[in-house]
Length: 403
Image (cartoon, rainbow, N blue to C red; front, side, top):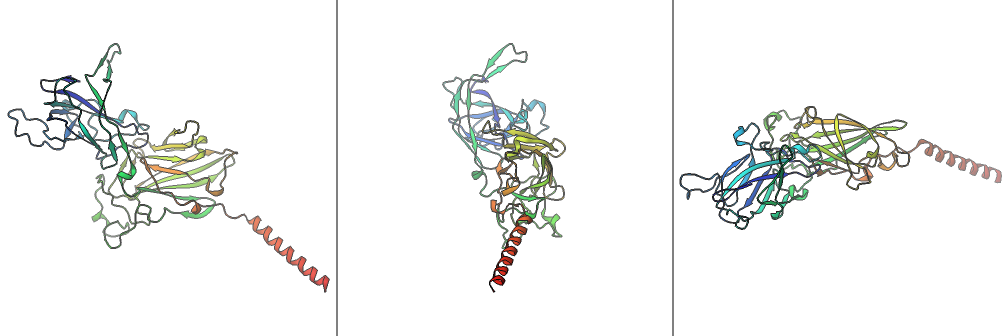
């Protein structure tokens, strides 16, 4: 943004362009490695986690002297003289679809011993982004056209002295070795409730007591943290699937021109309140979604012409918080679909979703052969029985006539 006596002042902005993956508490952590002997004199809207060894400086001590600084966002309620625009959210970034206005975070840094011209400044390297754990891989910083800024009256445009971009991509396999959610299914036309696949997110470790929580245990309060404390390591309820989150899809009712589904999301994690959660569901009937109750909805069209993917998330101040495991650890809604005569059927599991994502992570689905199927038609059994009886009587009459 500007030059100083021995360096520059820069504004760093993190944009979350992901449509349905957000960064929740305890928030993002950004790191890099300086190319020369740069130091950070001061910061606004963010801070480094460590100052490092600044013993070589006399008088004015830098904010950070580390070769590889790590920066975190400031918390809400930070004094105004330490803030800049888009800062101080505790590192929380919303997804682009849910709220683009809160999908960016910024901080200002004053860098020293860095050079004072475009030719002497060196771009930092080895960028890392944690949100809050692993999963993101960042590419090298690339110098691009300087950012442009329009004044409030829209009559003048200014630009930065220098701009570089770093792109970070996410991998669920890098983020965690095991899945984080699973799907169970049920329907009105079949008494079978298809549970999450066994050991979908891991198996119970019977040799290590305390690896999961028995909700019926009398000492449960002593092992479960107090409400509102978010810890990165999950402490899950003892289940056959051992997943922190379960999504249940229930085909509830059938009407002449419509059919209804109930979706329930249950939190089995005692260490996490999921704020600003979201759900992405793929089903061919989303092109005829008529009404949704108590959830927000937006159509996602990754294939442009095919409208079979929907993003669902909670209503602000009503159910946008999925509380930790317990009596309040669930949210639910119902969806009403209009039937398409060309494609609609309850046969062969068509009414169930093809794929479900919770907070951007792919959930484990039951195997297709386990889906609740339509019961065998009694008319088919009756026809088979009558056919058998008729054949038997005909055979008896033939034998009697021959005798």
